[in-house]
Amino acid sequence: MLGAALIAARTYLIPKTFGELGHYRAAAVDANASRPMVYAGREDCGVCHDERAEQFSKARHQTLSCEVCHGAAAAHIESPSEHKPPAPRDRGYCPLCHGYNPSRPTGFPQIDPVSHNPGAPCIQCHDPHAPEPPRVPQECSACHAEIARTKTLSSHATLECTQCHQVNERHKVDPRASTPTKPAAREFCGQCHSSDAKAAPEIRRIDLSSHWPRYVCWQCHYSHYPEVR
Amino acid sequence: MNTLVQIQTKPPNDPEQIATERREFLRKCLMASPFLVGIVRVAAQQTGGNGDGVYHPEDHYYGMGVDVSKCIGCGRCADACKTENDVPRDPYYFRTWIERYVITTEGEVSVSSPNGGIEGFPATVSEKGILRTFFVPKLCNHCASPPCVQVCPVGATFLSRDGVVLVDKDYCIGCRYCIQACPYGARFLHPVTHTAEKCTFCYHRVRNGKVPACVEVCPTGARIFGDVRSMASPLTRFRRFNEIQVLKAHLNTEPKVYYANLDGEVS
Image 1 (cartoon, each protein chain N blue to C red):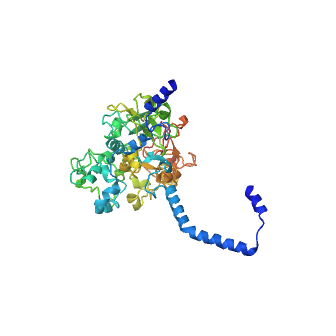
Image 2: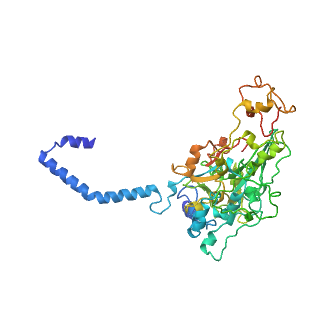
């Protein structure tokens, strides 16, 4: 009697597909899989907008999905005329990636939204779909903002970046393929800092032959903000 | 052993008969060959996975790679995740979010994540000198040994055969035990359904051959999605060419979110 009751209770209480694949309802897998998609994916955008996709694939923004700027577009693919994807045209959107922030990796193109052509929408000068690589940045600080800011506070503020770094043209188009040089020898810094250097008297001097001879200067002194301690 | 005995007890007949048998055998082989080719083709399709157009969960085992040095902290992933998965917009509910780490010259570490990074991060960081600062994307680690699954009293959360930790929201009783158990803070209780919620690697997208929404919109390719076991997956390339760390490895949860260029201060 009790056994029958237990069997009945078991059949009634345990949900249908429970235990088929493990200690869970197998039907829950399909329930999770059957949600509708909201983002379509860039391949689907290219089916209709093939010319734009072709142009975009050569641009500096080629790693981006269309939906990064234009928003989720699965509804637009379902009914193209009813759902129009938005295009951000104000100054607020681009700085989410390109506004200066010291936590961003060095070399990522950044501007200060407050001082960079205030009031003008970004797309007035920059075409987000531009197939050509951007015009060569006039200043290294376009990408190396954190370094540029640090340097302005240091005793090296007046030095040009090219004083110490030789930059291949390719670095401006494909930054990681060709990285700028660093001074290879102690004597380079020694031009101003060695005890017999012909330089302004207020520049700190060091005896190159006795001062940690096995190191290049920048291995200890951060040249963009040289601290002597 | 048996066959060996039979062979030994049956001495070979005359050469003429052997030749006839051999001819017969080859003829049968030739006749059967079209069927054999068919069988081999079907078998190859089934093991290959996609050949028959049916999804085989056991052929996949998903994971994600995160390259910390590529994250620019734009928060597009966290935003897209909320849109894709209908996550409440309030700033307490996230399936994925971005954290900013700031380490001062005195070694002080501060972590912030204003609204998960969806509206970006303030440019000013610290009054004190910064030694280093960076962004770290966080999400469910889809552990191979998930504590959240272990503690669920009803079996409403589980590790699927394709390596994704899912929630059965029709069966969840909302006891919050899994939220407590997750060492990564990756779960929350949905304010409307009162059931546990978490990243599913966008399971509904992955099953349809798409990548998760956060991976789709990441502008710098800081997130890489793929099959852990497949040798021809972007994730395997990522794991081949980077020094990989996982979060809280000492807990033996065996996370399947792999971090490259991860700072030691990140937990």
